[in-house]
Length: 255
Image (cartoon, rainbow, N blue to C red; front, side):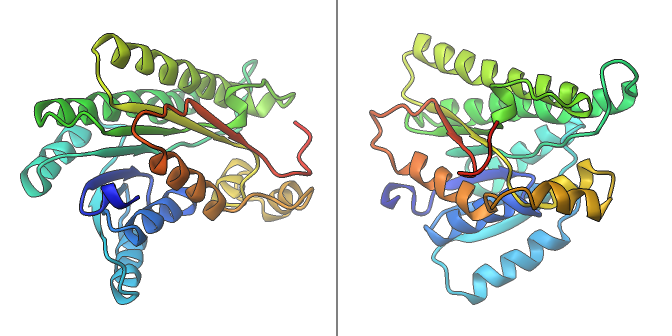
C-alpha cells in the first residue's frame, strides 16, 4: 500500500457498514479519502476519530445523493478543484428493498437500479475521466458486489436486487475489456461478499430487528472489516496483477 500514500480515493456510501470500514482502512494506510453519503454526520464523526487516532491519511466527508447525477458531477468537480482528482474509486453504495418481481413496487425497483447500477456507472465514468485527464495510468476502480451477483437466491424478496448485482458483475468485466482496448493499466475489480453483519440486513427486513437477527444468527457472519481487508489486498497487488473478482462468504454459509 506504500504507493497509495497521499493519493485520493473516493468511497461511496461511506457513512456506515462496509463503506465506513473501507474508508477507515484507506485512511490508516495514508490515503486522502473522500467519503460520500446522503447524510454526512456519521462520516464527520469517523473523520474526527481517524484524526485523533493519528492515522497518516485523512477522511473528507462529502454530502451527495447518488440518485441525482448532477450531485455526482458536482462532487467530482469539487474533488478536482480541491484534490486534483481521483486515483481510486470504491463504488460501495448499494441498497435492497424486499420487492418481488410479481408484485413489487416500481418505485423500489427504480431506486435499487438508480443506486446499484446507474450511480455506480456514473461514478466509474467520472473516475476514469479524472484519471485519464491527469495521465494516471495505475488507478483502480473497485465495485462492491455480492455473492448474489453470481447466484440467484431462492428468495422472492431479493430477486430484483440480485438482478442489479448481476449487472455489477457484467459491468466489471465490460469495464476491464474497455480499459484493455484503450491500452490502459487502470485496473477494475469487484468484491462479492456473502452475508455481512451490517445495517443492510435491518433495512432489508423493513426494520424488523427479530427477522434481521434471525438472518444474521444462522452462522458466524462476515464483518465489515473483513471486506475492507479484501479491498486492501486488491489495492496491494502489484500493478501488473489484475484481480477480477473476490468471492467471500462465511464458512458456514451454504449458498
